[in-house]
Structure formats: structure tokens, C-alpha cells
Image (cartoon, rainbow, N blue to C red; front, top):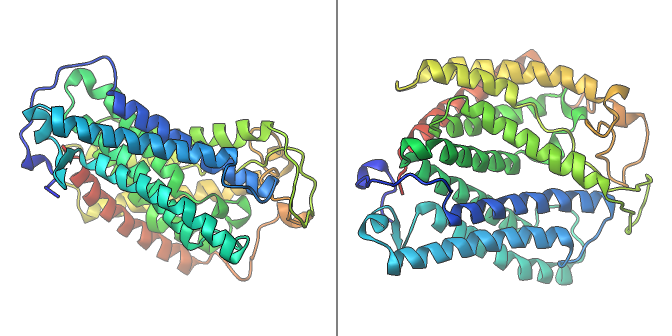
Length: 388
């Protein structure tokens, strides 16, 4: 592939438009459909149990993948055979075809998703029901989904980086929305239960990669308060889909053992409050706007990010396990599977001895956060130059 960097291509004049490109709208819709299907499928498994390949959540996932993949394919054909010289200059060539880099990423993701479907069906016929989520077919499906989400974000990013002032706001928001969906895909639902938030693993895990995601996406954006906006998008999208809409639908378990009565689709845990440490990211990035960020910036942002993340989630977890959170808005007790045995452990912190939060773990988490931030600053700076 050819380089996708800013310096490798000429920057043509782009006329201002009141609408987003058709392919970006279609890919964003597909990306959203994938996320809806994923959250729906998670709820289906913990509320109903075993599903078939043709279940509604799977249909939403594969519909989204097909929309993103076909849009990218049509864009590649159109650019290759009917594109102007200026349009072709803003693409990457692969096997004789030309398309934006993000389109090729999405095409690969769509292909991986489609291959994973018959592979998963064969796996079930050969080995029966899945004991865990990390089977080879599921890993292939997950990788395809992540690549599609990244491809959509890269498409929006390249358009933002070439935008005229009149287009900047809508393309900048499209980039941040796509980035918010990537953030939603890469924050695993099964490790954000409030019961884990007084243990060391929860904080070490997110300190290792969450600052990288937020900082790199914000650094690549042309909008102010980018980290806050994309974090708010992540929180709002997850809350609407998984906490406030999906639980409205009735559901009953169909696979034993049934240890807890379920009458409606289960919710997911309330999304992480990433918007609060994101405010600190934006504060420091705006102070360094137009300047090259280094290790000192990484240290300040990384420390601020983790300290705020730690304080907010440590105390919010106490609230989430209290009776005050047992309602439709916070879903404090509505994310357990029918297979879980009801009891006081639903409202307690888990593994206080096996997974303690010590001063040593806190310091190691701060170090992880600084390193993650430094890589995020470097990667975000590169993404801010992507034109293809």
C-alpha cells in the first residue's frame, strides 16, 4: 500500500457541502447497527440463553458489517473507474483498485465477519455449545468488527483532515461519533461491573490502554473538547442502547440452569464515567495546542487521567451497589444473568483478598497511564496528518 500520510499527497480544493458523503453516512449507520447488535446479543445470552445464527441481534451485527463493507467496495469501484485525478490522489492503491485507507480496513473487517459465520456454525456442530466467548470463530468475528469500526473512524478522520472551514464542524463531529463507537467496542462490558471497582485488576487494566484511546482520538481531532465529546458519545450511546431501550423488551430463559427469575432483557452495567478524566485530557491538550507534546505532557495528562478515573469510579461504585441505583436509569441490579445465584454478593465488592487495591498497584497503574498516554500522543499526532 502507498503511504496515507499528509505529506504524500497534494491537497486539492474541496467545495463546502451541507451534507456528509453518502458512503460515510452509510458506514456510520452500519457501525451503529453493529454496536446495537453486539449489546443486544450480550443481553440475549444472559436473559434468554442459547440463540441461533438467525437471531435478531446477529442480523443487526451482520447488516452493519455488510453496509460498511459494501459501501467501501462501491467507493473503491467508483474511485478506481470513475474518480477524478484529484480523488484518486487521495486514495491508497491495492491490487489495482483505489480507495481511502479506511475503506480497505473496513473491507477486510467485513470479509473477516462473513468468514466467521460459517466457521462458527461448523465449530458448534463439531464441539457443541460454547463454554466461553474466546473461541477462534468469535475472535475472528470480533477482529472483523473492530476493523470495521476503525475503518469508519479513519474514513471520517481523513475527510476531517481535508475539510474546508465550512465542513469542519460536521466532519469533526462525524469523526468523534465514529471514535466514540470504537471506544464503546473496546471497553468490555464483562469487566466493568461495579463489584470489581475496589480491586486492583480493574484499575490496572484500564490504565494500560484507556488513556491511549482517549488521548489519541482527541489529539487527532480538529475540534475543541474532543476527548469530552467522544467520551460523552460513548456513555450516551451505551446508556441508550443497553440500559434504557433493550431492557424494555420481555424475555424469559430458555436454557438451564435458571437460578434467577428474568422477565425482561437484562441491561449492561452503567458505562464508565470516562467523561470526567477526559475533561483533564482536553484541558492539557488545549494548553499545548499547536505544540509538539512530549514526556512531560504525557506525565501530566497520564497522572491526571488516572487519579480522576480512580476517584470517580471508586466512589461511584459504592453508589451503584446501593439501593439508590436500583432503578431503570442506573440499572444497579439489572445486569445479572439468569444463571447467577441471587444473594448479597450482588451488592458487595468481589475478591477483596484475592484482588486488593494496594499502594503499589496504584503506583503501577499511574505508570501504565503515563506510558499509555505517551503512545496516545504520538499516535494521535500521526492520525492528525492522515489525508487518504
